[in-house]
Image 1 (tube, rainbow, N blue to C red):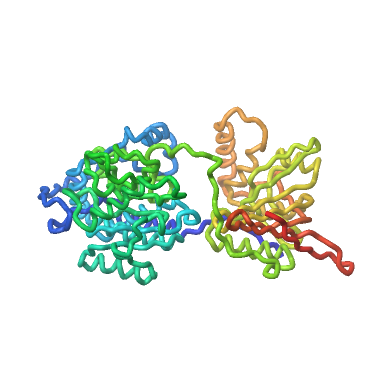
Image 2: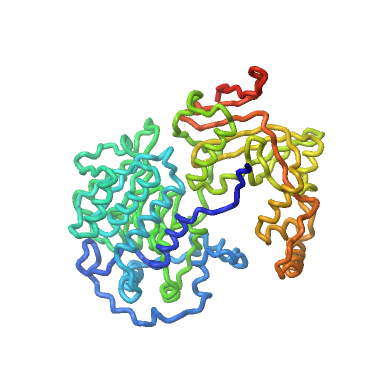
Length: 543
């Protein structure tokens, strides 16, 4: 019985993110809605008029779109990745936007704090993977910037990090009490200032600076002055120290002037700055390698009033990089894998059963296209070619995929009917290699699968003379539209004779699981005769 695979999408994360965006698609941090809030400028800003609620032209907000179909604006959007072409807010503008959001635009502090903290956590995961930067210390101030840090720590816990909290001046309000309770329920430790190590590099890989936001002014008082000095000292570390923790500042590096930046040049030097809503003027003075924008909640009325130009958020992401990523030393890119041991006595005796187990775990982990595999073939000249294809079924008889019988891979398989498949499941630190002989599946089987595909994919298979030269994309598109119109009545679309499936009959399996210090697990299954029957021999290979 075929284990047929259909392309699908896990919607949980997408729907969760969209629900957040639908309920709160605006925000400029760090809140100034309540005149009595600690560390906020006690300046009264006039109530904003109902003009904020009037419709505006879409041209004013295209910078915020990340929907498919915006390709015609690619040049403009790419230019906004340049930090010089992005909008920066003054302290007064940031405060006015907060007041508008929590006034006529109907947002609450807890909504905005949740989105901001999620944005910070998402930005951290973009750069600092938990396998290398697992231990996080969030230093949280008494205001809303500190609340952002508490929320970020909760999300980081769920993302696989091990956060701890230093929260010396707690805000005695229900919102903050709830954030503390949530963290305590996850067994996230709270550390007093006195119990922090003098050298933060001894216990932490990431320091989240969530002490003060854009509305703070004046000079930090104890214990925050001492905490800021501890972060500054991390940049003056002894060269014999192997590794210093990275500093991630939330919206404003604590102690910086919101508009003038690090005035004396002796303040915190963060490795990452996560600006919220729009960068503040001080962000122009940020010289670290990673600047992200978070807080995907700016409504069009705010964008129009303040003429905001910001980079578009990709896909469903809650953060977007500002500027180009730093130059990468490719030779230094590496992961120190952390995985359960993969032992001979724990694996299945049949490699198909073992593959099914790992495949189901990859599906259950929500990995994108777990059925994607690299197919490598070689013609009679011995030259090898590889490409990604999608597995469409497997059982004890082999692994099946579908393609054009006139493509390069098909020509090579006709000359040399042997191939290798490679599955790579990054989120699980796993890969599986399968080698074997290849033959076409029966035409009836190809016919059945073809008519189970979306009609658009059926038409695409007819349009594409795979691996041949075409004068332009428009040629393919015009032919597609012709066939789409031809079969618009719902009639059966005939399968092309040059299209069908292949089955690889396995002759060798290798299961690989990443481990620390490159001592990876590699178990090979190879066939052998046992009592006149075919069996599989399992050998451990050196990594």
